[in-house]
Length: 221
Image (cartoon, rainbow, N blue to C red):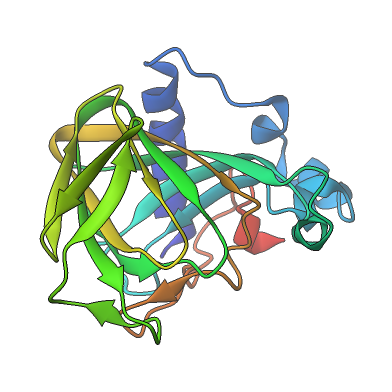
């Protein structure tokens, strides 16, 4: 992606988030220089901040996602079973913009439609070897109640509705009827190691530095 494109997406995304009454934390608005000075802080070590990705495919409008990680624990605490074992993100998925099929090895997550269009989530159960089970139904909790869908079924979440995805469950999502503000509350999150994609794609974008950044992305540090 071009840095100029990322800057535009970042500013438009912030305005979209604010339109729902959600305000990002102060470090979201630090200059690149100040963010670089924070090297070694929890912001850097835990991957807090702006995250705009086209999954390395160069087609953000078709396949991409806007994310901001507001809080995240330390993965090392999972083995102790105590500490900050949770994470939170705010995301924007545009109308008909695909977040491609993937699963997580460790992370359990609640995906919440915070407002806008309808969030569509395509779901598959995992095979014993971690692959996609294209034959069996899949059952997931949605706002405290189990929902069973055929393999590849589409769960439709209106604003205020949510789904819980346990580790291993394959999922892809996009918005219909307008862009969608999406919340994620999850186990400690490590985007560098805990995303397994169906396609041979990357989690982060390759950046073409055609202008200076407005704010740094997590992939910049």
